[in-house]
Amino acid sequence: MAVTVPLLLAVLAAFSVPDVLAHGGLANYTVGETWYRGYDPDLPAADQLGQPWMIQRQWASIDPIFSVDDKYMACNKPGVPPPSYIPIQAGENITAVYWYWLHPVGPMTAWLAYCPRDDCTEVDVNQAEWFKIWEAGLLEGPNLAEGIWYQKQFQHWDGSPDLWPVTIPKSLKPGLYMVRHEILSIHIENKPQFYPECAHLNITGTGTVLPPKEYLKKFPGAYDANDPSININVYATNTTNYTIPGGPIWDGFTIVDKYCLGC
Image (cartoon, rainbow, N blue to C red; front, side, top):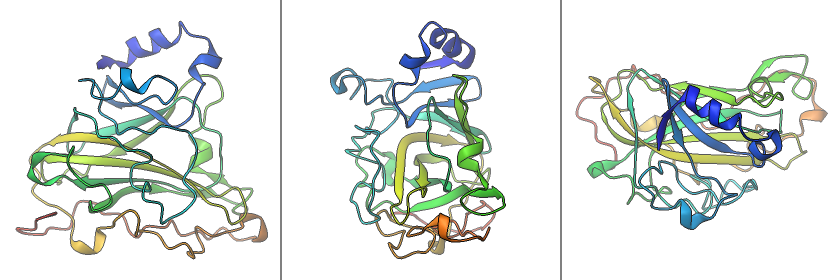
């Protein structure tokens, strides 16, 4: 189901705020003025799974994932694939829409994974090779606990959506991809909370490149449980130094001739 953003906002205005804010997590996506409906764990799965408008992998609960070794770290639980894809051109923004987000402390990252053989529905998300295209963490001090994180900055408490725009690298090779948005909340001492969601994209454009192997990660496997950026007590430090886990961002400018992901 694809509708324009103004129409979406008009429809949502007809609902009370408690109804709109009944759940957390990545609820919708927008590309330009077009809105795409995601999975809603508060509605019956039978009314959503397999529907021609569904573009997001199923996430059945707002509960976080606590272990970096959890088999659902890639795309949340249970991760049932959708039948459809969001059309987007390389160089455009895809905006993740949250109608409610509570936590204020921790980094946010966005990832892509190329789907070989022009099909994302049959891809094992644990074997997919993910590369990070965006990240944001602590924006300003005075320290990790009291500073302003991007996770806090994108929150709205007036009933309007929390919007998270990410640009698809313009030089990226066209094809079918999975996009993975992850919020890592570290507000509880040594108890990280991971909130990943995934959708399917049909990326067009004139790009020709894919990232080299050093940018590719698997979930689980991308993170170390002992990483001090993950296993952390933000209240026990007065520093503003924080390294976002998962390695570097691929900016789309590394040219790899005849490189094949998943071959």
